[in-house]
Amino acid sequence: KYPDKVTLVEVGPRDGLQNEPTALSIETKVALIEQLAQAGIKRIEAGSFVSPKWVPQMANSEAVFQQLTRLPSVVYSALTPNLRGFDSALAVNVDEVAIFGAASESFSQKNINCSIAESLARFEAVIDAAKANNIPVRGYVSCVLGCPYEGDISPQSVLEVTQSLLDMGCYEVSLGDTIGTGTPVKTTNLLNVLLKDIDASKLAVHFHDTYGQALANILIALQHGIAVIDSAVAGLGGCPYAKGASGNVATEDVLFMLNGMNIETGIDLHKVVSAGQMITAELGRISQSKSALALAAH
Ligand code: HMG
Ligand code: MG
Image 1 (cartoon, protein in one colour):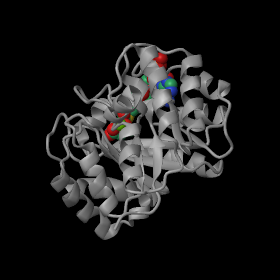
Image 2 (cartoon, rainbow, N blue to C red):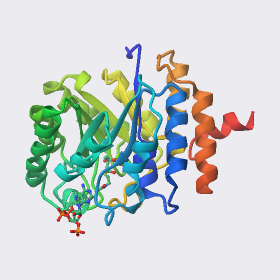
Image 3 (tube, helix red, strand yellow):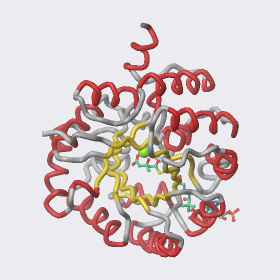
Image 4 (tube, protein in one colour):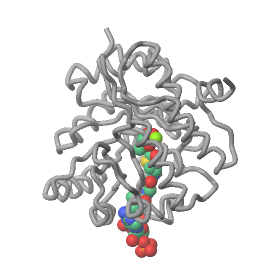
């Protein structure tokens, strides 16, 4: 039994572009986000308020939010690792923010320069500020199916961090397979542990397609009742603190699969393909989406 409806969270403008060597102009980012919204995507992660020394590609996020023409039906969100990032996000009226932790101590240190426990304390401050301003907070947990520094990660440690983020007040936690080493059996084992204590409606999945396992893993997540899927147009993406991590699963490929299953998304696949063609031309690279390549050839 699959969900009747699925919500896609488009992370291309953030996760996709944070790792691209080509710096994109504010105008190009704005055009991308606007095209994705026009395609019917209802949740778009449009930028990130992090240190520009750590992720220079996201340094123009403030200007992107300022110049964006927003559709009222769309939620535009951004990453905010600390209070400083939250204040910047608030100043440009971000609709929703996300805090990002990890199930691996080493990854937490490399990505946000603090331990898991320290990160949760920082996030508490962000959540308090967000609550005071009526801004919903999404949580991320990275390395749920493997860590670039520690290898295997136990489902129990994923459960603990996920539960902490939900207890603090995140309305949803997105499970990040940061390096894409998850396989369907591993994904099943993880979800069986998590879903004993957590309702599927509180979870989203975020697969990087490094080893080509993302769609298979998404199918497993759907079978477990998870109905929120993160993806990036043209399969853009990667994480600067996870070497070798390739892009997120391509939005076009997820849509082709969901359309074929008669699962409703409200998104126009062809418009997403066009947005992908625009951004891959700007970046001078080819799309990582097989569906996009196939549809473009027709
Ligand atoms: P830190 O060095 O420990 O913090 O960084 P700090 O407070 O000592 O600040 C250091 C410098 O950064 C200072 O500047 C601060 O002002 C500045 P300086 O005095 O040296 O000139 N700073 C900031 N500037 C702008 N905005 C801010 C901000 N905070 C501090 N919000 C910090 C800690 C978290 C800031 C840093 O480690 C950082 O920015 N990390 C970036 C991490 C990141 O963006 N990673 C990629 C996103 S996560 C991801 O991709 C995974 C995900 O997709 C899920 C998955 O796939 O698993 C979500
Ligand atoms: Mg990611």
